[in-house]
Image 1 (tube, rainbow, N blue to C red):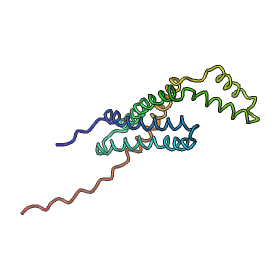
Image 2 (image 1 turned 135 degrees about the vertical axis):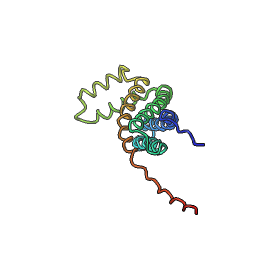
Image 3 (image 1 turned 180 degrees about the vertical axis):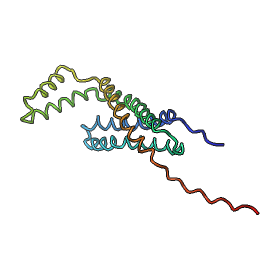
Image 4 (image 1 turned 180 degrees about the horizontal axis):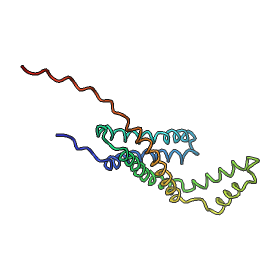
Length: 186
């Protein structure tokens, strides 16, 4: 009995969970990088690895289908992986920004103000005045605004990256040569 192959939608749904947890870990590393500076390096490498993970999922599906998966199907699978993964990661990021680090945006704003104030060319800049006003008047984005903005950015960039990784995932499969046929019976 042959094993029934899953559709791209089933694979994307299943593989979106570990991808989302991975993205949530990357986002948490970014959020806590001001507390533990080595996390910024970890975040950088984790973000760079995301397209490679999506490629691996696309390549697996292409090989599972014996090289007959269309480019558009692999691209759609990549887009769905980014959507499902980002949705899960967004949930965890919202929880972190809302409950664990509710002052995160204001701490970052204050850091920018302190840094810009030390640069002579930036002391009287309009950007510094705007950031000061945003911090003073509590106008920084809320956690849900940050999550939605990140969601749309990541899924948009993910759809573009999926187009590239889908093309690479469709490279030729190295097939093993068939064994020679048995000799004819006499």
